[in-house]
Length: 389
Image (cartoon, rainbow, N blue to C red; front, side):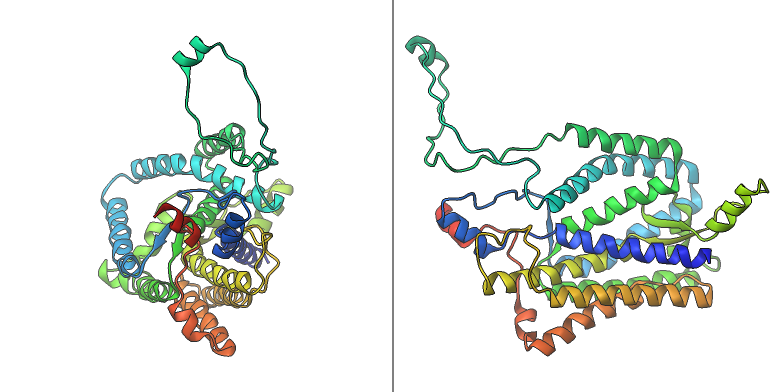
């Protein structure tokens, strides 16, 4: 019973990370930004600059190579160097990264829940201030004129509290090393990864999934022969590194609770785990499918209301891809439980996500459009480009 609870928690947590990260990765469609610009409104209302990094096909080809180099380097470090020192250094690095990732993710969640900006918008006001001429002449500061008094000011939210919360959580994690805090930080890293890493085309997505399909198979199944016995490189690194790069849940939680409640000898927690790569990599592809749905819907029903927070639009590609992800992960867990051995999750997740999108495209007669589509939602709109050229 405890094992099924652990597997179900891993499945639910991973699926939630993919869904939340996908919705948080949305941007206001180009069509809406053009309409806002023409209406004299802020074109990039509540858009964060520099929040995403577009991944091209060239980057996708290099991903398995770079990933292999990093993974094998970590394996050698754990094998030949002091494990405690390596874990301390890596956890210090992840603590610094987590202190910035946690506030970013929490702010995204607040905005999605509120359906807009973190603070209410205030109408712009015109204030008249009389300053003596000599003082004005010596201290004047030229500012652009106000052309539209009704245009709202985009008020930045106060980040101090949420930033302090991020540092507090990471400090508590470093002190207690609680598996619950490890999971919380890992979830934030997973969502942040899906937000930051954006695929420019489905071609890039297929290349990435295919490359990491073989990467995962080799480092889980084939690398045991490379290192001459013992666990595979992937399993060795995942189990030796005590840090927020994986989702954990005890497989014997109920047994531990019963022993504790009966004042008996409490057994050590045994964990089931899922690496963040098995969440982020398929997650960025699922997010691309959602942005493709958003693009279609924004062209069919354009309007000023269709911002990044407007979610009531048809999502055939996203629904199919997310369902395929859940099915692929469920298959991974089932095979792992039956055979009692670690499984390369991308062996099941990569084909599931890719095939689901292709099937929907074939059914809707949009395969050619899907193959040639380029995601431009993170770029300036044509209106803004024309203004700056």
